[in-house]
Image (tube, rainbow, N blue to C red):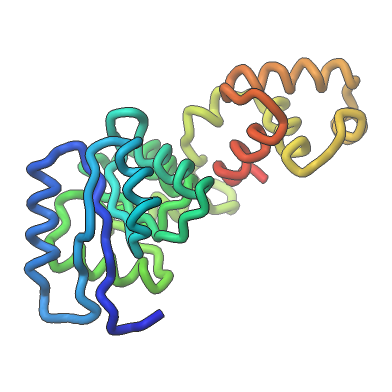
Length: 223
């Protein structure tokens, strides 16, 4: 990585006026290096995935809620396509489920739209070199959500929370490569019960086979 090379940013938000404002702030510069420059933008999930794949930006600034899905969906599809871009969520929302959703999907940080242009440019530089960046009031929440210590706030993900505890147990073992018979032995249940749980998980996660289900679990850090 060339420390002095401009950081190429792709901006994803469904409000064109907001995109224009962010672009103007970043393009204005703050006198520091490396320079942050916006190389492209998108207003929907499909447009974003295509643009990221074509332009291969260093950093993607993305909103959480977008037509055709959301920030987490962009992350999942971009990762599946092999992108090495770093993702930083930039959203008006500070709701716990929104934060955890995109972090679980692979975002390196999450800042709210109240951030100044100078601080946003700094956040882009930091995630580019591997730092995790969060707005001050979100940092503690994120640490608690992903902590294993007693009393920590549980991670919030509606897609995961729809699964029962037993279905999650089966899913984790399935994603790790266990056969149905091995899962049955590990959980002290019958193979028929394992099959029932797998069918239920496939339906709830809207996946169609073991490979898709394993990727679904990996994307949500369940394995």
